[in-house]
Image 1 (cartoon, rainbow, N blue to C red):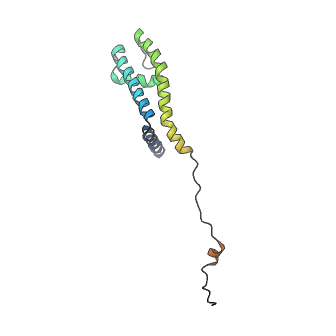
Image 2 (image 1 turned 180 degrees about the vertical axis):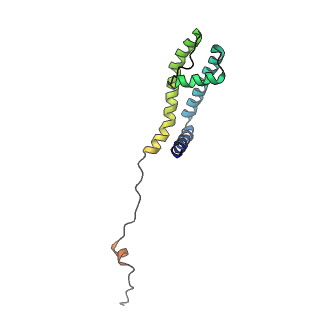
Image 3 (image 1 turned 120 degrees about the horizontal axis):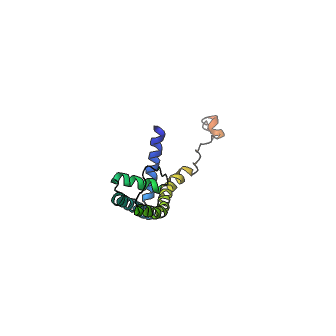
Length: 133
């Protein structure tokens, strides 16, 4: 369970870091609009619930494709062809934008620990005051 929480924490941190970039925010809105348009289309044309339509949109654009939902209408199939071509590039760009900060952070070389070297005078102990005047 701890590795899952660690990975989830890193993912959220990478998302927050990526959100600071205007390019990423624009990409996020495009992905949101793409998934929303697919969800609305499949709900209206195929008659699926909003949940099933959203599920199909995500599964299709991430190229998982379980096959449990399939468009049966001609318009649904035609839309899916164009939806896949346009959406896969967007999803991959989005995943890349989230992964870059996470991978950059984990691949940075760690600075070596600085240890203070002891000199000979420190090894010998405190010096006696010199009373020769």
